[in-house]
Length: 247
Image (cartoon, rainbow, N blue to C red; front, side, top):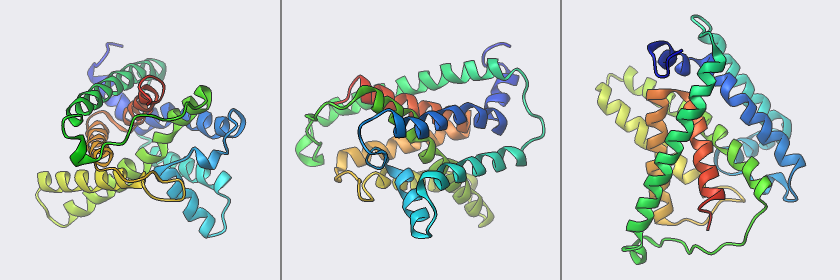
């Protein structure tokens, strides 16, 4: 297989490749949080994961088992719906997806570092949070970073963005306008999700702005390179920030 050949380009976007690529991350995330770290798993979750588990608890379903089960059901239903023309040579496709995910993660990391330098000039206006934080267990957080983006990409890109785009297209909005509106709305919700729930972070304008831009970046990846690479890039970016540049 030639890297970025037409067959590879199609293969990475196919649901079968995407689901098989992200399921190991889900297993590492769910199992790892329960057995590797001293911190209770609920205190390590954020964003869409917290939303989902809170909703399941409200209808008396076990958040521990129902949340990953629901996610797996959504992913498998998506892959079964698009079961035709499944790509072959999945090992080569997955290898390329790992490389691409790392490449896009580094690109977003570089963008974040550049924006951070710019933010130093306008820190008093954007309320950029202080950099000092207590150190945290490395292995525990590595597991957290690998899996956290999976729930967020499923909710905000696979379900929310795709659903909004479909509805706006059905409403006969111009294609470009519908795409931009769905991208911005889903990115804003993605940024805001980190401030909600019992373990939500305090609101900072700068962080919210960057997460909105990151949400738009992941939406672009989802549209152009597919769900699997969006999840991989999200996980890779979290690892870079958490283990290399974590304040």
